[in-house]
Image (cartoon, rainbow, N blue to C red; front, side):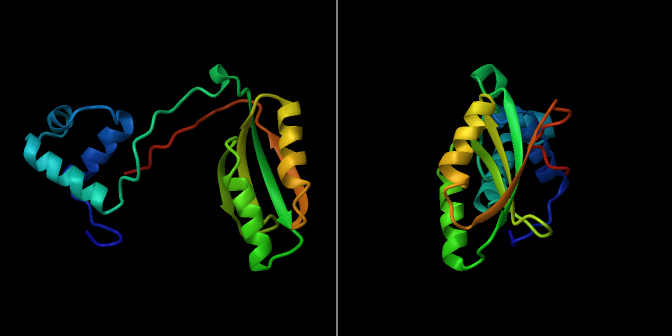
Length: 156
């Protein structure tokens, strides 16, 4: 498959079915998409080999695990040299409460999505990671009030 593969109806069906239930067997997947097991397995393997399927994960309920707050933070750096960027990104990569971090265009250099137990937990994160980093100039934090939609399913 090329970098951006053209997907046929069965490959799209495989991906859609896996996004709903990644734990299903190849036989269950084949039944769901209307192919026999062997061609389904070959297509599945090709999608994995091409990097279209990155990983199989379980979505967990953050609140039930004690992480009752989701925080979005816009981070602006004072320094934009390679070392400063690498140091900031390394610090973010090491923190388990950071679920996503994107390098951005616009007024902020990064946007972070983190889960924390409470405001005190977030304050510790800021003190241990953000405020001690000399490259950080400004951070603007936003606590989510309520989750409206949260999916990892891509439109196919």
